[in-house]
Length: 243
Image (cartoon, rainbow, N blue to C red):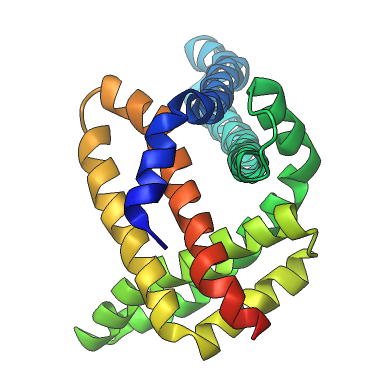
């Protein structure tokens, strides 16, 4: 992969990537607004009960409201993450195919694939949780975990998500391909993990700037990261899978 050419394409077509990031930003903002409304709806009655009732009644009311809010927030967060992931990767797929890229493109892929992205995310979360057992091993386990997380995020999350949307793979087949990359092309998988780690550090620094940094990361950072990694998959990984 020619990284210079990849960045040049990004800068030449920055408006198209802006649409991708804007779609993700809108989902995040709407999700945040809905979460605030849920908080008021679930915690508001509990606060009124706290003011009007005795200590026991108030405690039960607050705990109940917190439980409902936590569950609703979890569901909302999972759905929003699925929409963002599907919309971003779908938009990158559309861009690579030479199709129009707009908010409607983002939303079309988001609606079509968010369920599969949620399923993929749940599977990856379970894999990460199980592999966290490495953390009980001092130093060596921590180092392995530090390497494993970005590598697995690329090979078992980003690459499979791309295959689901671009190639029509099932989630199971896409994950099987990801594990095949881990087994037979570990160096390539490791390079992908390093790219993700570097992007994460840079975007983390930019995102640390209050509000403006977060907006820049959402509008341009995430679309660029996914574009770079999908380009690497097509140029460096897929040819070796087909060989």
